[in-house]
Image (cartoon, rainbow, N blue to C red; front, side):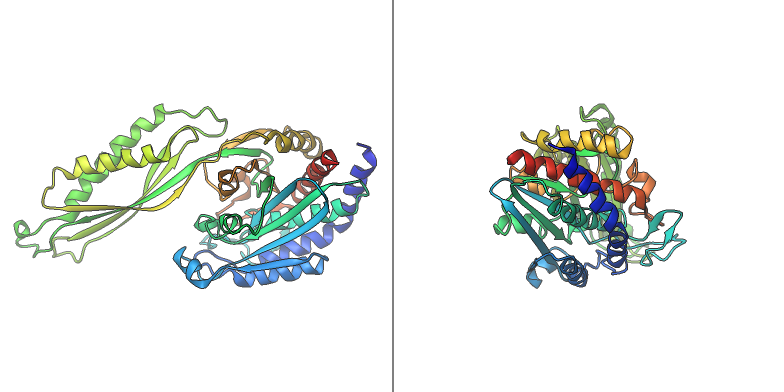
Length: 412
């Protein structure tokens, strides 16, 4: 392909970069914390901004009952379609919901302040930045002058922090979108082709309350829970020997993230609830990981025959693994990313999980790439003073635009 269209891409992105920066700032200034998950206002703001760029925006509100079943208040998914002719359809997905700011900020988490070349705010790195990245990459592609074939879709969703079931999965299950490749929001210079899965279990241990002066007349739920916890912690020591072959992913993990229970200091506790987070490496089977934990808990509970235990699955997010055809995404991202970022850009895995897995679960070759620093830790993503260097936003937009040019030009 002639270098002239690539130069036009570069020039168009550079020319619009002040507008792109303002676009991102406007999104950051619109709160979309999840929880509580009232994200329809963010979708309305994003739709207005996208229409201001000349895009036709489809609004797909999720019924309130479905949103509430996922622990959210309101969700509206947005779809933008730009058709260039017959050919493959590429989805670009970024989410607008964010974790609550938390404490420790030195900047207004909704202020979008720019300091020393970096923008600060909740969601500026994960992943409101990539709503901006993908929209402005598509704008540049549309005016580069190259003969193109295929369709690019922007999917702006808002439930990644609660699992993606009413975001990408919802769009795919209802055939609102049918795509051949998917690119989802990234976190760093790396191209993510694999990530861990995640299992959340709720373990409810029930005993019988009694006066603390007569403890033998009750059944102490905390005593049983203590043995369960000890067994789980012994069990997780063995995870270190299970090593993933995927670069960037190490071993399974287990965290007891929440404990609730007891009535008062002078009462034998009748109930304890534990919440477990088990990260599943790509080589593992989720069903086997869950069964293993259930057996560990059952064995510990056997020492407390008067207590009862109920285990409920809250979340199961399957791992992301590369699918055939993903090289059509990875090779151009490596080539253009390394050139434009001025540093080696290569595929790897990450230990967290994302809703990009829903595209892969539908058989769609899927990778994650977007605006971010060299490592996700550098951006303080999900931490105080989350930020993104604007130069990285500019470069990532050009990388994505060049990927689209390769995919659409190859189809021609």
